[in-house]
Structure formats: C-alpha cells, structure tokens
Length: 108
Image (cartoon, rainbow, N blue to C red; front, side, top):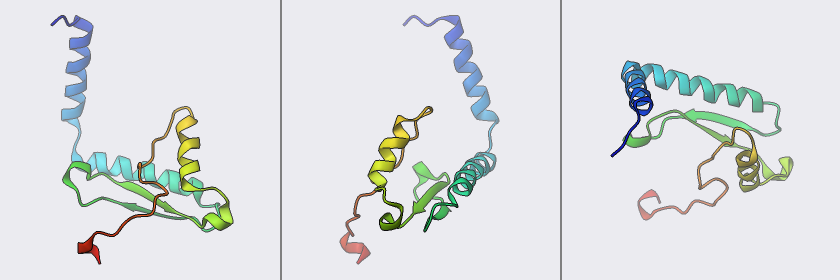
C-alpha cells in the first residue's frame, strides 16, 4: 500500500482532533446547531421543532425533528428533502422523511 506522507500527517491530525473531543462537548455542539436551525424556521406557519437524542447507541447525537401542516405550508417533506439536497452545502435528511411510518406489532 502506498500512502503519501501528507496523507499520514492528515490522518494523525484527524485522530488527534478526535481524541481531544469529549462526548459532552460534541453533544452540546450538535444541539447548538440544531437549535440554530430551529430558530431560523420559527416563522414558518405551524412549524414545530424538537431536539431529541435517539435511544440507539450508534446514533446517540442530537437530532432536530420538524413537523408542520403541509396543507398550510404547501410543500411536502419529500420535496423539502430534494431542495435541501440541491443546496451548497447540500443537506441530507433522514431517508424516511415524509413517509408514513408503519407501526410494528410491539408498538400497538
């Protein structure tokens, strides 16, 4: 395997940065970002926002959940997802955005 010295230095710098981070500091930063986005969306009629941390160990970072009345706002969540993906920088949403969720038998 051929690896340049610049790639090695970049990897070492990335590992050093990662190891200097704490879970609490990263959670606070992600929560701050989510709250900043929510604040920008407050003027949209019927918009409700909530910052949650999923109960899944592999994805335990703050997530911003948004809900609004599509009859009043006149844009489907799937269309919002497409428009956000086109932007610079692009924004990816949960692939389940706008889809009806099926309840599992255990949830009933």
